[in-house]
Length: 315
Ligand code: PEP
Ligand code: MG
View (cartoon, helix red, strand yellow):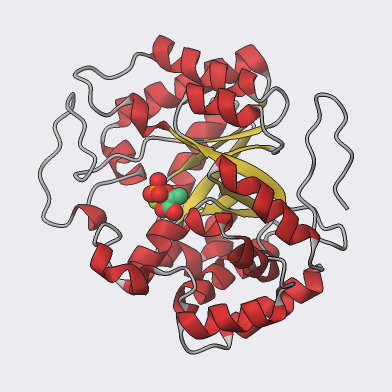
């Protein structure tokens, strides 16, 4: 049931019954953008801009950033490009600005929290994004990482809108934002769920500690419940809710996410084909049944087994 690929167009992700779920790439550089844009996918759902800031002595200038954002947007033509503003913190320190050491970097001044305290960094990045937008008029969406409450979402949204950027959003990766998604979403145009951090914060398990992988599984019913909260919030405000954490690239879990109400999935580019095939084999109503079965499970293993037993064996 894939749409025919016209030259220069890109096949939509579709469930068997034709519900559109945008399939997007996670990227980290302009070179990644060039490679991903050559694939059959609908754009980038997460451009992690950290790479431009880490491991260097001076902050990237507005000109340098404008050039990079322009190249990324141009690579995707009229396809969507979701740019995430700088997600640095004591775990990913910046050499060119004073950042106090923290005992718990994951719970400290990271993501938008840093941007609110180092406003010149955030302002320069947003100015570069607005110049890149004016130069390209691409389908540019701008979002902030690590947003926890309505005040933060409001702060970011008014800054982005003041620059005339067309779409502003937040990542939902803090449980507080998931639980209060409808209020957070009143401030912005869209949200994207970061399942890596959402699992870390829901399960109180350090995502860098390999020993805790079981707790960090996105199949944990508590994590799925958190995603469900976010999606219900999105449904109340009729907002677009994507997923850009690793969970979206699992062809089985992707069905559950769609069943929970997610409208786009962004992942490592090489995973798109398998997720596309999995969606094409299942109706939306089946995805909803799978999501319910996962939520009704007691453990991550049971949730996965329940979904495997309901999915097309070809997945
Ligand atoms: C996430 O937390 O799921 C996410 C996409 O962001 P990052 O992995 O860059 O923290
Ligand atoms: Mg994150």
